[in-house]
Image 1 (cartoon, rainbow, N blue to C red):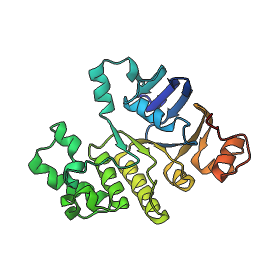
Image 2: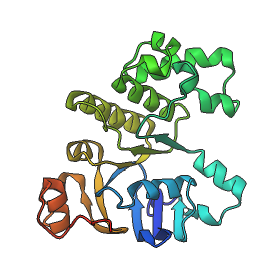
Image 3: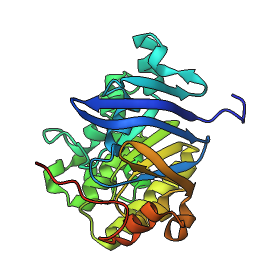
Image 4: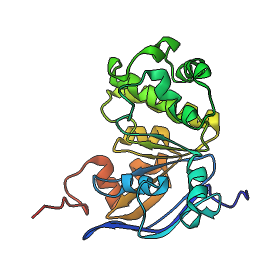
Length: 258
């Protein structure tokens, strides 16, 4: 793949639900091996953007290219193979309550028959070690874990297939500041170790600067600003500044439901 072709290129992406235009011509590039953080208020379209790339939601218009290939125009089987290269850390972890941790971590590998069950328990121990947990955690059920441990297990599952692309949906939601910093550090370490390209969506501005190389802000379905994540606090953009500093007054006004 040419170095000039972004790992992910999105052009003119649109999605509406009834009368609500959630994505309105989104354009984004994510260079190979870099991390992009997408910020924006509730309902701005961040989660819908990820779900469109993952194939969980079908967009109304636009293109989504991975390595220069528009996945929306690919046959279903080819789309599945492309999306199998993506690892996902969901906001709530999305662990299977009835399965032990080791089986949660290796669920995808077992389903794709890349591992035998006899191998999976040992492999899960290796993935747990990469997120700072002991192999013995593999025998526990998800409801026996703290919120921070559940996030680590979900991260271990996300990296198990060594994905080229990783998505993180509000990775520090519900965690205290110290555990949030731990999870952010693990995310950065895992992404760098795998050489993955990453997109994270978050409301946590401290987390955004820790995780991201670049940042972009969604507002009313459009990208209104893009730049280095280190520039978030001094972007000079009125919408970004209001959002970052949590100011009530500014160009962003809360919509009232009538």
